[in-house]
Length: 159
Image 1: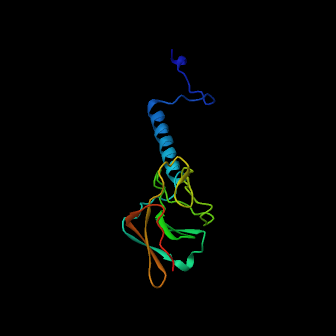
Image 2 (image 1 turned 90 degrees about the vertical axis):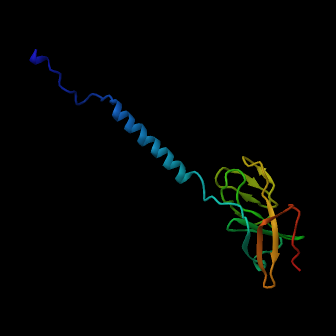
């Protein structure tokens, strides 16, 4: 009977015991979670809740828009306007890409797109960007006031 002792097969695939299987599953889950958080979404932000500095009027020409932190400022033929630069779908900061009103704004996280006035043109976002009151100081400094929501048609005259 002593000759009947089985020797391990070095060339045979090994079956995982329960502990090894759980360790492998845990490690795989960790990689999936970590990978998703690293490559999934761009920086997140919160819409403004109070006054936010938004550059200077000299940075804008008619037809341009710029993201300044968590706000967007733009200048059209009717004046300056400001809105949130935070996607209404999942809170990612938007990208101004071409920096033109015509090109609009895109969300690098999930592909939502907004026109230059903040209306959704492609989801998954389904809510337009909130507009806020804009003031222009004597030196041309722009302030977007997140505590003062306004209709999307509101403009601050430049002259």
